[in-house]
Amino acid sequence: MGIFSALKGATLDNPDDSGFFNFFGGGTPTTTGIKVTPDTALTCSAVLSCIRVITEDLAKMPIVLYKRAGDSRERAVNHPIYKLLKRRPNHYQTPFEFKELMQSHVLLRGNAYAVIIRDNAGIPISLLPQDPDVVQMLETDGGEFFYDLGNGKGIAPSEDILHLRGLSKDGKLGLSLVKLMAESIGLSIATEKHGATFFGNGAHPGVTLKHPGKLSKEAKANIRKDWEDIHRGVDQANRVAVLAEGMEVYQLGLSNEDSQFLETRTFQRYEISGFLRVAPHLIGALDNATFSNIEHQQQFHASNALHPWCVRWEEKLNNSLLFEDEQDIYYFEYLIDSLVRADFKTRMEGYSVAIASKIMSPNEARRKENMSPYEGGDKYENPNITVTKDK
Image 1 (cartoon, helix red, strand yellow):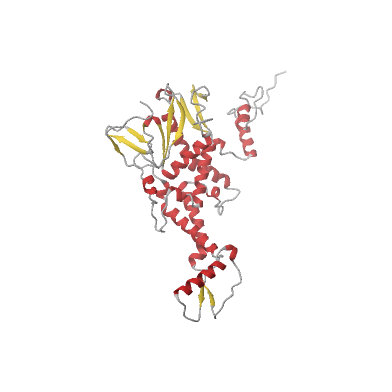
Image 2 (image 1 turned 30 degrees about the horizontal axis):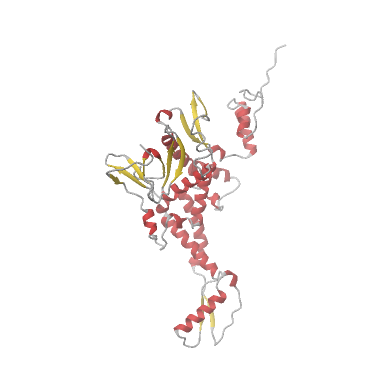
């Protein structure tokens, strides 16, 4: 079957309508009145920070294709697809850019799609990301799945699509986290807008101008406009006001909401980071971080925010890029150790214990530190034990 095949008699299986809905300016409505979409969610600083943390961390970690060799393993450098995610997934993206884009799609929209281009032997040679807002998943009456790529690109069978999905309620389409946490994102955006308006007014509460006489509607509008033109904005704050005709100025006090909106913003950052399982210190929430627990928070981040996504990537790549008879021999694996590194002293102490216990050879420890091996360093021996000959 070709890359794009005709589909007859297919039924649409609950397509993601975000593209259609957003085209008409829609989004998930919230109690604050702010409509939240994947694009407007990125205007929330906490969401943007969390998305960047996860996508960039996943993108910078290498994905390696391994080959099982008895009880050990080795890098499958001679396999045709070894370089696909290591050097060039397609003609216009680096591996970092490809992984970053796909991960951002699945976080914001619940699904990420890439067309798998194959050579005449069926071996994948390129991965082309698609717009998740226009891709629709199709299911035939017989239970086969196809993908309408939208924009007149055609329809592809499931074996030619790398479909990375997030949390799902039917196992077919992922759920958009943005929609699930729309209320929190809407509240966070609302507090940010409130803060911008507050400081746009010179960080002063509302002002009332009192005139002793009776003013027409037009006169009130002119006085209000003149006052705002002179005093509104951070750069205009604390300018001298000149009043005429017996006018008086009354400055209103701060409401409880105004005086506590910073605390609300802080709480929202923690709540959104909790949704996405990102360690708070990575998005600037350092209230509870100390030098003694920052490393544990980093471990939490790797174990909870990143590792589940690593497993999703690994399993999907195994199923989509490897032939079925290859999957008992070859497998993809994220090198998460490249992200979680202890301080130098701790690493050296760990290597010393591992070498003394014959768990690692000196050269294996050197390779982890990107150092060249030395002759004789591949032996598993305890360097602290000195063997002497009997006289």
